[in-house]
Each structure stands twice: as structure tokens, then as C-alpha cells.
Image (tube, rainbow, N blue to C red; front, side):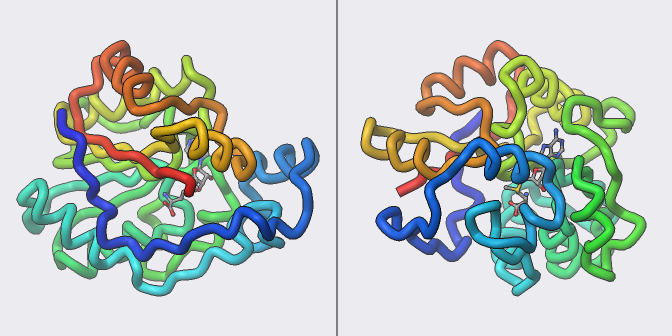
Length: 218
Ligand SMILES: C[S@@+](CC[C@H](N)C(=O)[O-])C[C@H]1O[C@@H](n2cnc3c(N)ncnc32)[C@H](O)[C@@H]1O
């Protein structure tokens, strides 16, 4: 189990915390947690404000392939794959890699990239409908913190079951009270969040032995 930033080549855009257009309300949170059109392609206060493919996952895909030494024919699963951007770029970076995704959002799957049609499964991270040790790697980026704590543990156990020691999860975290305050101001969907030590304790409780890193709001 290693703390490693596999998204280090992901372009960072600093959120301007002083310029949230509208105060966050319970209604914003309720709509965002439906993971429908409003969350992905609606206004910014409900989620992404437009979730479109721009190739930015290709560099991350290359780093993941190198990290696990993946080769054509290996299977990779992306839990919380949304529209399948990373699934598409993993296949682009290594032709012959068998990449699949799973997401709870029917909207995202129906609006997926053409290259991944048929590769994305509708379901929840707490139950991954695949055999034990059937994947060379399982990744889950900015997804597991959206689950309540007990479900987060179930999801981590599922990832571990599918790819023992070969998972990568990235979750919301903070190192300081200031970062925590920024996070709490922005968060819409996350239900489980800790400082890194809290996450490590949760990983240990779940028996998760894969790799991990943090998404820090700043
Ligand atoms: C912040 S988005 C991340 C999408 C993508 N991994 C990325 O990094 O661009 C969170 C994703 O988690 C999905 N999600 C939320 N709860 C889920 C669950 N219980 N099981 C699977 N996916 C879930 C949402 O539909 C959404 O696609």
C-alpha cells in the first residue's frame, strides 16, 4: 500500500473560493447527489458545470500503465467512471488493454464516449459484479468519498477482492483547518472525508492494501 499521486499530471485549476456565484443550499446538494444531467452538464453550482472529454486523462492513463506494468489483454476497472473518459484514454494509451467502468449514474453512461459503449456497467461501488482477482488493476477517482462510511468500507473491500493490492483510490481530504474550511464550503456530494490519517485508518479497517492519494481543495 503506497501513497502515490497518479494524477500528478492532471491539470490543476485553483477554485476561486471568493467567487461562488450562489450560496450552497440543501437543494443544490440534493440535486447533485442524483448524478443526473444537472450534476454533469448543468450550472456550476450543481456540479461540474459541463463534463466534457478533452484528453486530459491520457497522461494519467500512461502513468497508470507504467505504475502497474500493464500489458495488452490485462483487464482494468474504473469505479465511478462517469462518461468513461479515463476508460477511453487507457485504451488509447495501450491498445489491447481491456478497460471497463462502473458508475451509479445512468445519465453519465447514456452520454458516454462512443469508444466505450458496451464497456460501462450501471451499478454501485458497494457491489462490483465481477469474479475475485479478475482485474490487473482497479481505480476509483473522486468517487468513494460520496458514499457513507460503512459503504465506503464495503466498496474498498470490493476493490481489494477484484484486484488484491492493485487498487488506486483518490478521495477528498485536507491537511489543515483552512483546507477543511475550503472543502466544506465547496462540497456537494461527499459524505465521508478525513485528514489522511483518518483515511488510512479506514483503509486498514477495510483491509484495503492498494495505493491511494488525496484530492485537496485549496
Ligand atoms: C466527482 S465524479 C468523478 C468521476 C470520474 N472518476 C472523474 O474523476 O472525473 C464522481 C462519480 O461517482 C459516481 N458515483 C457516486 N456514487 C457512486 C456509487 N455508489 N457507485 C458508483 N459510482 C458512484 C458519480 O455518478 C460520478 O460519476
